Length: 303
Image (tube, rainbow, N blue to C red):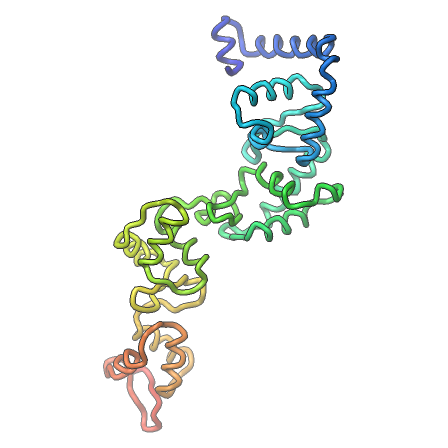
């Protein structure tokens, strides 16, 4: 129960409840019973040290037991124990326990520096995120500089998170907390690394995110979002890969505008870098006299 709920039950203020709680803890710590359990508190302290000296409350309790009742008893020991400090959840960090306040400050500052170094939509592999994070950790014992402890420290942050594919970034980014088919499609195509058919995109969304993705719905979302470019019959790529937007005619126009009059072979070569189409499709578009004209030297330019 919260302090406020207890106060209402006994018709006293939450501050009075807090005073009673603090008084009780002081008396417990002075008792013979508390002294008898020193071995247990020492063992619990050693466990927290081995987990990184500062660890998220949920992570710690799950590490020690899967049973909720046992977790509650361990939580009581943490509250009673003099060696353990609970830092409450705030806008930046989750509830956490520490046995080294100075190290906890360094961890918090390092997580803040890491967050400020990330761009809003940056996505990093877990190994890259850990490496980047460890670069910001200063004056920390080498025994703590390993992947498992780094991951636990990263999980303390509410501003940094990982997506279902295990990729890390800012938690506010749609690349990390995907909320719709477009976001899932972006992550799927990015993971694939090359143009992919919309049917395959729908299939992978279902497999990787356990979200039912209808083929038609997926296709419609891809069409509407500027993050995606249609590069062939049903094939989509990410615009950030440098593909030009528009139909084949638009691509030809953009190429000629950028490079000037070109021969048929030169145009075909450049268009095929942008679109997965047959050469004949390019030639049919070049024959459109409304947009393109052929000079005596065999080069095409814009009308």
